[in-house]
Image (cartoon, rainbow, N blue to C red; front, side, top):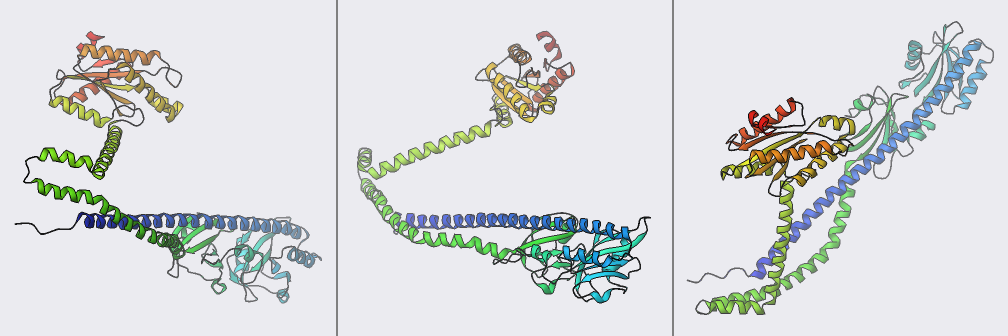
Amino acid sequence: MLRTKGFSIRTMVSALVVATVVITLGISLLISYRNEKNSLMTMNFQLNHMYTTKISDTVNELFASMKQNLKYNAAHIAKGGLNRSDLDEQVKLIQQTNPMYKAVVVVDRTGKVISIASETDTGLKGKTIETDGAKQALKERKPLISEPYISAANQLIIMVSHPLWGADGEYLGYVGGTIRLHETNLLNTILGDAAQSGNGTYAYVVSASGALLYHPDKSRIGEHDIVNPIFADMLSGHSGVKRIVNSRGVDMLASYTYMKETGWGVVTQTPTDVILTASKRPILRVALYMAPILVLLLLVIYWLIGKMSEPLTKLSNFASVLLTSKSVRDEVPRIHSWNSEANAMHRAFVLAVGQIRRRFDHLSLEAQTDPLTGLYNRRTMDLCIRTWIAEEIPFVIMVLDLDHFKQVNDTYGHEMGDEVLRFLAANMQAQFEANHICCRYGGEEFVVLLPETGLETAMVYAQNLRTIMEETDSPVGRPVTLSMGIARYPDTAQDAAVLFRDADEALYRAKHLGRNRVETANTAASAHML
């Protein structure tokens, strides 16, 4: 009974090509999207971190200058005392030369305002102020930048202050300049230089206690108890970048920098959705540009597949006729002789297989060799040992170790140490025969396998290599010596692990007896050979 007719080659190959193209395109677009996203996120982190670092440096320099200026003026005021006749002029001069200060005050140690220079708060002179900033300055008696607090004029401010010390070291009070956080001033100009951009990026500043000192939304200035995962790290003196969910539940890419002069932190944040959206745009454009090209390409492929499958269809029909023929062997070559498409496919297949074999050989070579020295690796050594033992082929195993190699690395560096390893490998390849297996076992330890070789012959090879290393300057400018241990299968041991252990113990004995020598697994044999 004849089988029902299945799908044609043209249909199946076309479906396979379409599926392959769609899957490949999907994977390519996904990889491109992820790369674009990671690139944009990295760039955003770098730009935001550069911005926060720039802001931090500027603010640090600004407040360092303000502190230095207050220190100078405090010394000048204290020198003449708080009762000097030109005190108001001095205070007014400080306020005029520092436009950031909305008010400059001189307060005695009891908290009473002795002098004030301000556009609006002149009525405070002679009064005792009980603000948090004043209490902090009187209590700590050191140069400081206060935490934000509500002033006597009901304004949210910070105060930069410096203590006043008399000639005899007596504490007189302090001189301070106040900055209003809600008003436009030089500080806000610096902090808000690029605080909010069209892509949703914005910057804000927090004090050491976690209070907002600056924010594009002025209604949030002075806000406390903000839950943000980067605050603790930033206010501990660290800077960095991190993807976070902010206090409003928005996924953000945050860069933050600690201002050591003030103890504040500046943060720049960009919504992650902005980066994700930007990452999708080029991918969508590429997909739209490629869509008509792919449609045209698939149509062309469909036509080409029809042309390519035509000879195969003829060959299939011819094969069905040959089922009753007695001259099958004569006809097949003749069919292929005129089937140029099949011949071309065959040539392409041969070329492809050849390329794959070359690549496989290359990968196989990489899997069998040590990348540093070019010798065989431990995997190849284990395979040879297992094979020879299984086939009962006698062989000698020689374990080599560079003497004092750690001193070479410590003295000349690991790069020069690598050169010494390559130097040893080159000498091994030069001294041993083509059928000998030279391997790097690990670190400065090497192994040589000598099939169908006796101990006496192996000893000659070993001594020749040891002598070459002893008498030849290595890349470090002096000889580097070898210690070697030798064992033979099946004389020494008939198990691979025991055989290697015996050779390794012989190497250890060579090290113990003074290095730069060859020892066999049999001590008596070693003495005889030497």
